[in-house]
Image (cartoon, rainbow, N blue to C red):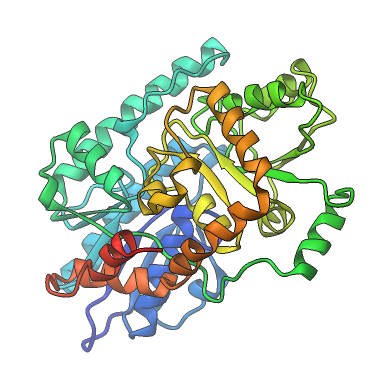
Length: 403
């Protein structure tokens, strides 16, 4: 175990530290920021990006997922996280330990990216064996989440809606939960003409035909709201003037059910299902709009990243990222994730003013780009270390300043 007398180490417990997922990207940004200031790190995870795992100040504790089981993997992650935290704090009592939600119970900092207690999935169409198994897993997750949150010295949420969910689900005091908004990729910019042309060629998009993107995991619980979008899409495709196509990027247990719904709705010629892909940047580059009618979304990094690339985004009003939308973009916030008719109507209004909407989003995109991942991580550290005078200033400015 490596330690440093000059700087107290941090132990970070997360599913992953890399750029392939929202929570994983946020945790990787925190790790990178701490390393920049010379902080020794213990990273407990299932996956750690090579540039982090190979750093001289990093001790990586890699945890397996036996037979690909998320439940067993999280149990082992929790066990290794507690072991590493106990070992490090025994040597350096001033060490900081950061866990995510219920993934590890430790009485220090809990960074919440998702609240199990805020979303009760119905799992429509799922087989009985899955509903029983998933119900047991959810009960286990809820119990761990409650214990971890009540044990925490400090809770940090990724949005105001996440903070409110914690207050409602677990009775946490609102002023005891701090909010740190997420950041943007360094150098993020609007999609160039060359990028757009290359991406549309990859997807074999004909001419200037509009493309609407959906990016998200396809779970059996329908949390991301793709079923609502497909119902809206069916009604739109029945209209002769509707000329847009839908691109779906995402994998998961619900993939087969989505394929069946596309066939059932007769949408095979108007919907492209990519499955899991690591080319989301190209999907966004080829698209004219992102739609995210999620039933529950603690933040919505897919929306954030689309806007940063100059792609307008329509998202559920209850998503954390919706808090940052300025009033002039309120038409792009969906009041009801179940309302396919309303979604279709909003898509028609967008299509009538496609270029105008792109221009309206430009100031908002510029504002989001100004807060890089390093800025978000720096704010997180200030909050974690108790700098009450400067902590939160950047995030509050992001949420309140005009676009």
